[in-house]
Length: 209
Image (cartoon, rainbow, N blue to C red):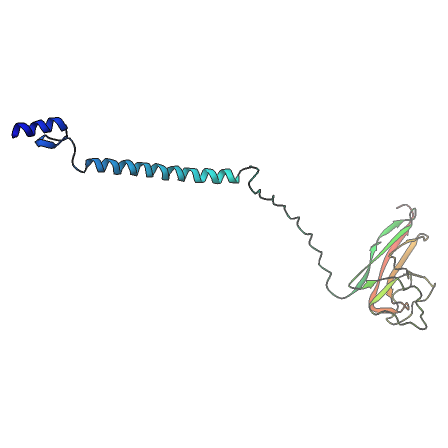
């Protein structure tokens, strides 16, 4: 019987049969299979992790199929408006200035300015007999050696006065060498003087300056 069993063992050649030692544990084959499967899964996961950022980079690139971000346009800084002058309304000489000495070889260039008061030409067709003057609107008057007139008076035509009913603020004055007092005074549409809107300066026109 033993001889027949050994013969069957030799015929089958099965490892581990008939008491012959085997090189692997009964679970060893399954373990190798499991590790191989895990390695395959891990390689697939790693390949996916590498592939996803690569696709993201490719999609954000200059490919024709991707959306391109619009370039940002820098906004131009807005210019800040100059603050309006504060305080009561006033009128003044821009040129000449008080105490100026001017050569008789040149004309006297006069310029007026005003703050917090509207300067405008008398409206076309204005009738002083029928129309009311506009409130807080006026025009310049230049007086030579006249001084300031009291508020509420009508500035006369002539008598050392020049009217600027067109709303202008510059004038060329031609005078002989001497000392002069120049006055700028604002009047309304009726040429009526306004409270506090007058200034007088002194200048000298001389030879050899």
